[in-house]
Image (tube, rainbow, N blue to C red; front, side, top):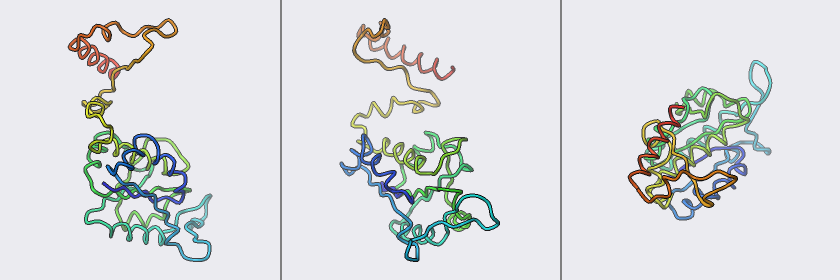
Length: 218
């Protein structure tokens, strides 16, 4: 799978994409992720990609021409690119959608910023809009990174342990994951549940299932 993150702040994404599971997966060739700055397709000496909104109002809007030229270039790189765009109007991203997107071969994620993107981009390219929730952020970079991270985890071999991927939250219906503990056995007068220490794997599995249900119902 290949992911292109279109952003005017590629430096804001670079460190995260080189870190932890995502970074290891990229270095092992399990997934490729590029940040693409639309300024490369902007005209003029200053490579301007934003301007004041028509009709007045606060803030700046990302201009259509450089975004469109960037999209045209990236969409030509594969046979079946899937274009997405971060937007508060988009459907909230969930694990079911992530599982579907993880099967794509090429994702192009357009990260909005400032007051948004010239709406003609939506009319022309019909990207799938997605959101992390009903709250305001300064830009779509964090949402784009969240999607890239979630999709990377589902690539074969990315976690190095098939059981880790299967046992995570939301992979069994809509349930949260069970509690997890590690050494020391006692910490600040709190001990781990005794069932986890008795070696009875059936009992442990039953306890974990009950805890997932309890957490999810709560």
